[in-house]
Image 1 (cartoon, rainbow, N blue to C red):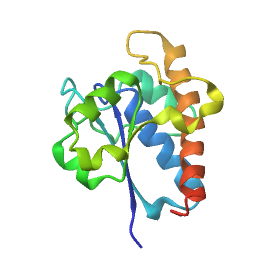
Image 2 (cartoon, rainbow, N blue to C red; image 1 turned 135 degrees about the vertical axis):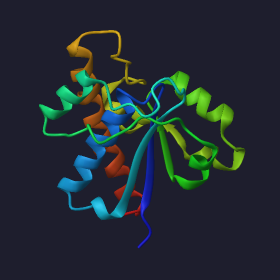
Image 3 (cartoon, rainbow, N blue to C red; image 1 turned 180 degrees about the vertical axis):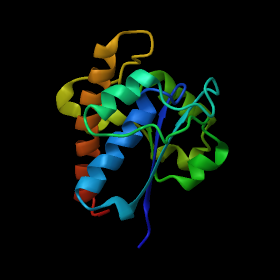
Length: 160
């Protein structure tokens, strides 16, 4: 059975996208679907390549039973557009960057992650990097909702 390949993308790949990778990995594991997915995250910029997620993101996630310390930041590369089935941007800026650099025949794979949580009436996962711990909790709340919605969308489409 072919795996569904999902890439979460933010700017530096140390806060939002690794959090989304960890949360979505946890969601599919809880539903015994982990073997059906390949899940990764990346950034549109190379600011933190090789670094672990922000310690505040790790702490907030760990308090919810999600481990992020094994994730390492990387930059989106050209092959990602071909290799991944779903490329989920955390905000409008990173969505625009992805659309700009993506080959046209793969642009349909790029979406904003919060499109899968329309009930939140929020378009973007805000960047918590320059704020306090509340921002990391908010990211987790949003990402948890979108993760459930994304999984439901895949099930509704018959992908699972």
